[in-house]
Image 1 (tube, rainbow, N blue to C red):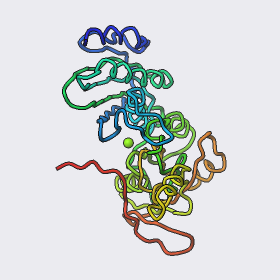
Image 2: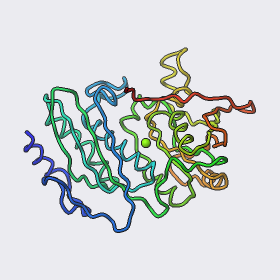
Image 3: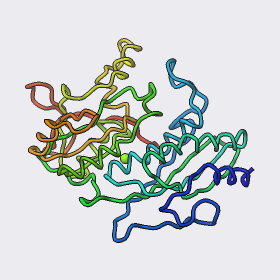
Image 4: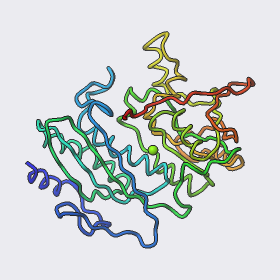
Length: 316
Ligand SMILES: [Mg+2]
């Protein structure tokens, strides 16, 4: 079955000018752009944790197919490159397949991945495929190239910087977590045209990832609760369980929004928000401060601590 899969891959994964040697040898060989810094990132997704193969994600959503999983596995990696403002170069894909329907699942995963790879000019250089009696796991490693201004990091936010967010937050479980568009073009454009101090992509929850960015930067962050752009899906989730969590609560802690949080100097943020240069709306949702920790502000009331909440991987 493995040789059958490799034959399938050779037929379906297009060659890329960046690759001198792609799928089929013991390792791939590629041309690195001269004198450029390279960014590398890896992510692993597991059935039962990051997705449920075959499960209906919601009543309005089709079952989770291998195609959706493949797309998501690549998209979360691309989102990490976006967070660094790095251009995708090349990816390698490790698949741990269940014995049952392994080949069909593997092909489906690639069918989900390849259109996204093509869209973002990513060369798929190869990978590894194994099977076992356990559930599906997918791990993708990407290499990226940073542009002239260098990588966007978590550690550059300064007190006084505005917190600028792309898009809307909350309710991703209703479908966005499988279908989101990584904010790559947005990140590359913004990093090229504006002075950004720091950035992170929101994978685990707006409040949690914002607190991580602030901590890495050695400062604090105040979130203006009235300014948080709430997704329509968050409203719908809240409606579905009356008396449960509010739409804002969903927006602050659901995670898997894969939007960007940026630290932008105030005068630059003003320009950025007035210009709104992207299709995706940009909002200012607070600012960084000297005092460490995560804080919330609502109207004129004094700021109060905000507990960072979101998705935490649990291990000991
Ligand atoms: Mg990330």
